[in-house]
Amino acid sequence: MKKAVIAFISLVFLAKCKNDKKPVEIADVKELTTAQKIATQAGIDNWSDIEEIKFTFNVGKMGRNVMERKWTWNPNTDDVQIIALGDTIAYNRNNKLDSIQTSVDRGFVNDTYWLMPEFKLIWDEGTKITEATNQISPIKKDTLDRITILYIGDGGYTPGDAYDLYYDADFKIKEWAYRSKNDTVVTLATTFEEYKTFDDFTFATDHRSPDRITRINFTDIEITKKK
Image 1 (cartoon, rainbow, N blue to C red):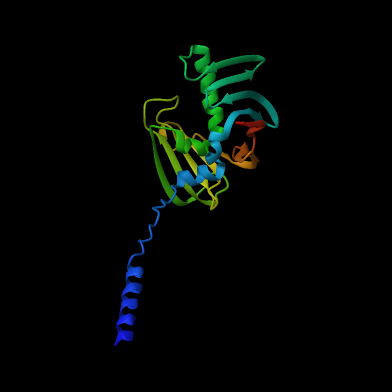
Image 2 (cartoon, one colour):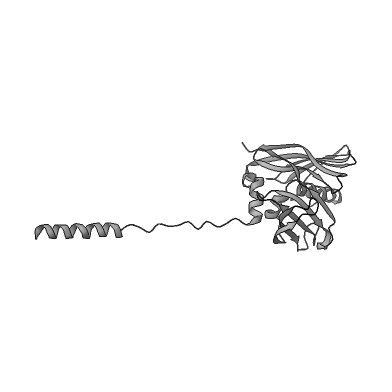
């Protein structure tokens, strides 16, 4: 009888120990959106490490370079410098811009958009994002998924415009189409080629028109990280 009581007490103790275990908390891990996945593969998670970025935006026609703009940008202070046509202009994007600086800033917004459209999917406000799967790309006619960013607000330099980004299974952009004022007719389409990695950031450094006559490419890309 004594042995039976001891055995019963032991069972109760074991059961109590078993029931005293705290429930395991399962973290609520949210699935990244398509825009976040595209930006992540390009390196947006490392953006806060940047002190300064330099790059040259080039436009070529028929194998000849017809325009270049050299940029230096500190994203922490929004100080910008451009060297073009022998002139150097520096300004801060947070300040009120005069007419010359506004014209330069249009070029800055355009050129950074070409370099890092992946990040614009995350950064830009006043936009509407839509998605579609198994779409035919405008140039190579590949079957790719598509994400579209439409600027619906009145701000910015191109309100009402839309960009269709065609990306592969690795969430890397392969082509894009720009549609002015969200028209159904494509205004401009180019490829995304020559992906290169610079200090944890991956950019397409070469873009070609469907006839390969027009080329937009980037050179002299330099990234300085915070110390």
